[in-house]
Amino acid sequence: MDWFTAPGYWLSRLVFQRALAGVYLVAFLTAALQFRALLGERGMLPVPRFVAQVPARRAPSLFRFHYTDRFFAACAWTGCAVSAALLAGLDGHLPLWGGMLLWLVPWVLYLSIVNVGQTWYAFGWESLLLETGFLAVFLGNDEVAPPVVVLFLLRWILFRVEFGAGLIKMRGDVCWRRLTCLEHHHETQPMPGPLSWFFHHLPRGLHRVEAAANHVTQLAVPVLLFAPQPIATAAASLMILTQLWLVLSGNFSWLNWITVVLALSAIGFPGGGAPASVADTAPVWFEVVVLAVAALLVFLSHHPVVNMVSRRQVMNRTFDPLHLVNTYGAFGSVSRVRYEVVLEGTADDVPREDSDWREYEFKGKPGAPRRWPRQFAPYHLRLDWLMWFAALSPAYAEPWFGALVERLLEGDRDTLRLLRRSPFPPGAPPRHIRARLYRYRFTTWRELRETGACWQRAYVREYLPPIRLADDVHRA
Image (cartoon, rainbow, N blue to C red; front, side):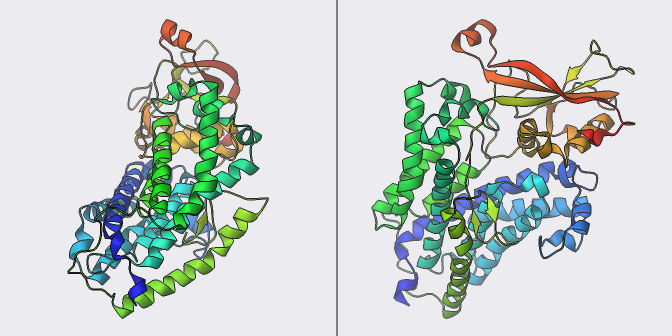
């Protein structure tokens, strides 16, 4: 079938595949370096306990057949190795079926991790990576030109990411309709970056321009993805610029980067056609498989479509246990005030207000007022992100916060590796730990010059009273 392939998108596919492999690599590296404290056998939310409670049909995973921390580590590091091989272009040196199987490996491994990841992996970019990674299996390699239908489905994902996010904003917080959300967002976002302080202090008029441009990019531009070239390229390029602006303004894991990757697949690069040596037609078996998968995905797409047109639209929801077709969206509401939970420990046998309370420092979340935010994305600091949710409401912390306090009281090394610094030496954990809630705000230009601090914080209330191992730490 002559219409089946799009030789002009040869380079687009190549750039997309290498960029996607890079995102996979970051995702697996994040899993490999953090899982023991979060999901391990002695983690805060252990995988063995989860698989014993949740039916396999709801969360299929390799770890249902076998779980040890060593096996999880092997899967995560294997994912890193395969992602690096794909980044280097190994799939192009294999037969078509071999390249497809190689792309299938990281998808299966990451699906297995996400489906037992519980609240640590309850982020939209996990499903987005899986949905995009599944389609990458059927893009082909150097033996064939990229299939038109797969390129279309990649644009369909990008459309849902952007348009769904635009709709959730317009239906959600009134500040998006008033163009005032960005007067607060840069300060109250989950994990500010090194430039967030400066973004926050942009003129109010420019914040309104930012919000208006966001609406245009998310509600109008996505439709143009399905227009002929070069209009589709222009639309995708505008989305990339918008995502890079977001990369500069904060730490959003690989959400922005996977969106950029999707946009790359829609760009028609000049001179990016297939080499003359490539056959005009794809193997029949490949066409059958691709069309069957496409038909399945189109059928499953009715769930996100219904969700998008619904007045009760939800964001970041998967509709099947394989994460094949999902709905997306971000910041349907924007916090006006930033709260942070600060953990402190003391070695005193009897905790008092005047005891020597020492603060634990996290890698990414705000802590000491003089410590400037750092850039971590696309690497994802999962505990830091959940601490932001915990500050919004103790209900978000219910499954894991008590276990975190318990691990800190034990001086658990895997948990301490998730932190920037522990105020207590190795092997000498505190006798008591408490948590306090503070209100944070960015300092003004004058305050920054006078104090050198980018944050100002004020005590709000006790979040968790002083507690020790003998107590019920799950009262948090």
